[in-house]
Length: 137
Image 1 (cartoon, rainbow, N blue to C red):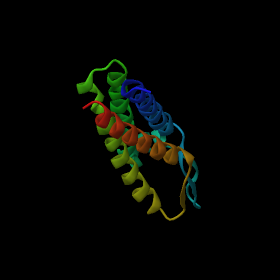
Image 2 (image 1 turned 60 degrees about the vertical axis):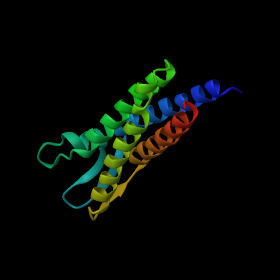
Image 3 (image 1 turned 180 degrees about the horizontal axis):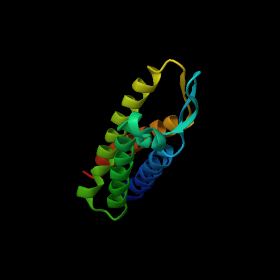
Image 4 (image 1 turned 180 degrees about the vertical axis):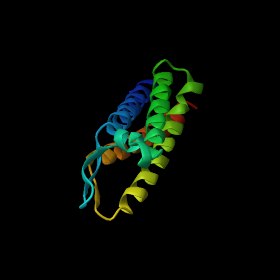
């Protein structure tokens, strides 16, 4: 297998990771079971709930979008755009870590699958981008 074809496999993994990040924002991030508030909240709902809205789902979504553009750059062999792949993964990871810290500080909240899906996608994006940078010397 040539390094060009290996590189395309890693670019496609980065594309999948970016898509997981974007999809994960619209899935459940936390479940709250408290006497005043009860329910499931997606990342998008956390960002748009009005008085209690938080910015970190936007950061995760932007990171996924930047990674998506970077994977497109890798697919069309534009090295300069391909470098956006790890940057997008890191941006998403920063937002995810912020969300994990913030949600874990809420007493009756449990972190659920959507946020974990974003975490897996951002790590996959970062790892695949690391290989792309190595292969395109």
